[in-house]
Image 1 (cartoon, rainbow, N blue to C red):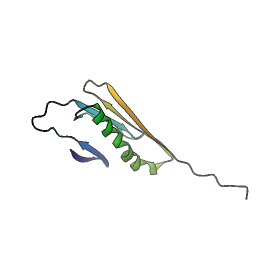
Image 2 (image 1 turned 180 degrees about the horizontal axis):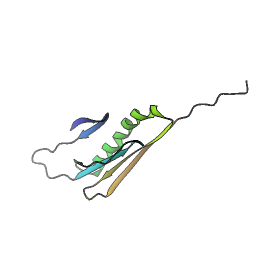
Image 3 (image 1 turned 30 degrees about the horizontal axis):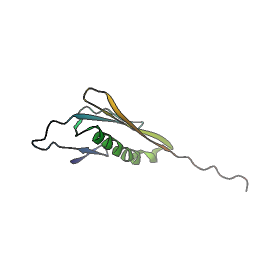
Length: 105
């Protein structure tokens, strides 16, 4: 497994072990409300569960970068297979608001 950066995001890459059979390719798209990344390359992964775990692991990193920029945001990831079928969708929502001052005193 290799780790690389993508605009401040952690991206995990799995490399094929010599002699191992062909693994299916999965594509992980992401959207942070400003930047939509449509994965054009994909990654060879052992199974859809591994792809789902990678996609889910991206959500906190995406949020960490953007939650300081506003009071609310929804972060999205989705996993597609080689045929383009969506296998998994994940969201992480952040809501923040300032407390209203107590005017009774």
